[in-house]
Amino acid sequence: MKRTVFLLVVLAVVAAGCSGSDGSETTTTSAPTTTSTGGPTTTMARTTTTTTTPPATTTTASGSGGIVPGEDADVDAVALAYEIVFSSETTYEEKAPYIVDPGGLEETVAEYQETGESMGGVELAPTSITIHGDTADVIYDLLFGGTPMYPDLTGDAVLNEATWKITREMFCAMMASARVGCPES
Image 1: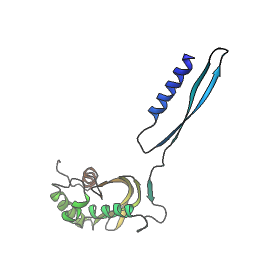
Image 2: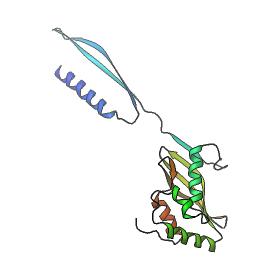
Image 3: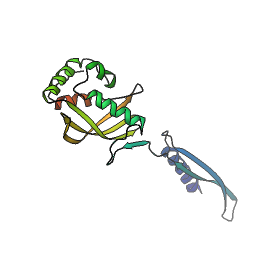
């Protein structure tokens, strides 16, 4: 009898430990059970726990048709951030609102513009964007002079202060690929 009660307590503790505060919904129901062993009758509660976890919120825009403008506002915002931040034709002032921690990148942007001029323009064209809450995974093509030179590269973006932005790390990694350095932050 003591083992049964102990087992029920352990199961209840394990079930409680498995539920989290991740938006899951847990429902617990109890129904009494009665056992008799020829002596006194014992009534114990039987507990059933059901947990429902909502699916991850993911938006993907990709496929043979590529990204469809106007289909998803977040996908459009990430694509816009990539177009502005990684175009060799946009200025620091245009890029800064779309970069997390843009301070001190003025000279880097000026050097990137010079590199772009020598190559007929440099830009990143997103071909697939997958949104996971406040982060986005991006697949893009690197274009020189409007021609895709390096397809299917991967990057990211984050939702920061209600705006989709490129992390400083992602920006500086791309600048390093263009042989333009970023200052230490």
